[in-house]
Image: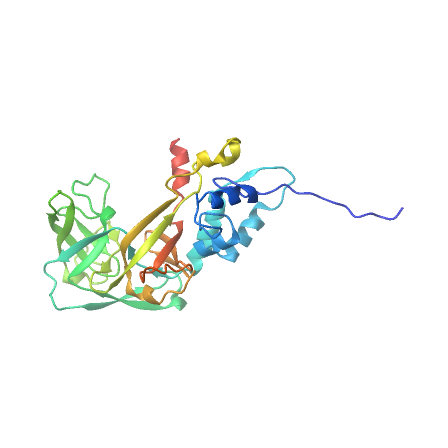
Length: 311
């Protein structure tokens, strides 16, 4: 008898912390749990594109997991690892301060602005360099300062010295607080002999932090996207999977301070904000503001893996 065509069926791919069912995705959209089909938290093509996922990372992910006839759940961490590997090779490095804390360098000349050279990629010389500026007032991350730091905290604290990326060693001398007692500014001094971050006398400084020039930066809105659901298998609650939604899947930060070079960033172009994560300029413009919006593509490390280990 003539050979007849063979039909082979493969199992549907399931990824933890999200849903791929069109019916469930439609419910998320229609009930306004997300902001449309292109919401960067959704596993839709438009959603992951807007978030900054690259075709190469998706193809690599598919090559790794292969195909199966048995239902299983794929770890979201594997997909994010493929994305990090791809972006680590191609994403230009920049500096951005998401939660700014002003630093005044009291012994730096008031009217001086210095040009410094920063690498666009530490391992790829062909990606070139860029010029960043340094002045008396800069911004650092609030998380890079502690008034009473623990033993293994190597960043800024009263009397502590740290290295500013591409710039100088600075020492915190004083703290300025507002009326409610919150730290408003830091008064620091810099060592002019340490340009580039190395001390000529050989003293070692463990902490290196990023920064931006307060007088030469751009304001931006940053959206920190996280896992859409708080449980690995959100569909285990068959009655109402909506109850497993992660209430912290989106955090919006206003008045972030970014390197001025990002003023020419192209939509969906991914950058590594040094020490913070990978971010891309949102392709969906906010018609009510001129402030650029950057979406977090993926963190530098898998924070959820650490959380699961603690559990």
